[in-house]
Length: 424
Image 1 (tube, one colour):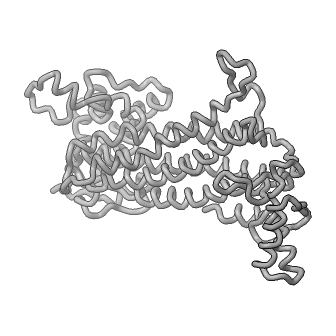
Image 2 (tube, rainbow, N blue to C red):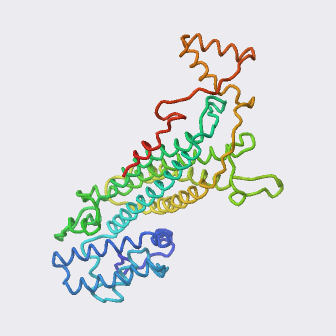
């Protein structure tokens, strides 16, 4: 049941510790091991290791397993160490000696590595698509509420006039920077490591260009040692990209929680999107956004974990790499859910009217009023001192009529230009 089994029994406690929960984790990469196995089988036939008839049998057996994975009936039983040993066992059970040939010219190391590359590549693309969906939602909200005033804050003190249009589109444009990093991570994993075997290649005349093309990779990870050393490096790079996006989402969620509170009262949500208190009947708690914040902060911690697991490992394979999969895959699955629920929830936001004539926001327009005096001929320092004096002696009366016209300001959001910046 083990790809490395030499007929020697192993202590059950040691086996349980070394396998860990790989079986549960590997369900997520089962599909990709089948994809890689199909490509590998085609390559083995091309170089004469297996016959055309054997290739047809192997592809048929892999097709059956692929269908089981798709319909949810594929199970990695307790007697198997991981998905790779399960797939080889099933092929051998159904095809006999032909099934045993699938492992020729590869190691479990590059099986894991290529399956992870394929999983990461596809799911980074899914994350990017879901980010684009939220991005478009935010730009739509920015356009809808572009004329709704929102007080701007610095140091959590009332500062200058902003708008809901500016707020929504700010987070939309920040996500473009996150997508730049997602694209960099995609480029990093879009390199075929299959053929590196245990980290030093194979004496079989394998055709790595063929498997690269079959699996849809952009290029090869040519150096076999570099391919194995990519384990950990891939995860560190991905963790930076996922963490960056989560930082944006977490800050947005924090704003949402803050603006919902009675002391701000800028926004609300339908009752069915909030929760109550077990003892305080007046409460409408933003639990969804608090959990988004917490989950995103947890994913941001992933980078530190990936660094510490792999930081000082020498070249070659080490079992430490097994520990990369669990929380990395969990982060992908979690972030996909986060993006879905964020997009679903934020569409139902209730934007309230802010009374800019309230004493709370009396000094929101001081900078605009200083600028008006400058346009009329006063120096900035003189105008600053004049308005500052009025604030100090209580004679300041705000003029709220000033417009901001430069690119990216309250009254010139440049939403189309922001939309066009999103990476294609």
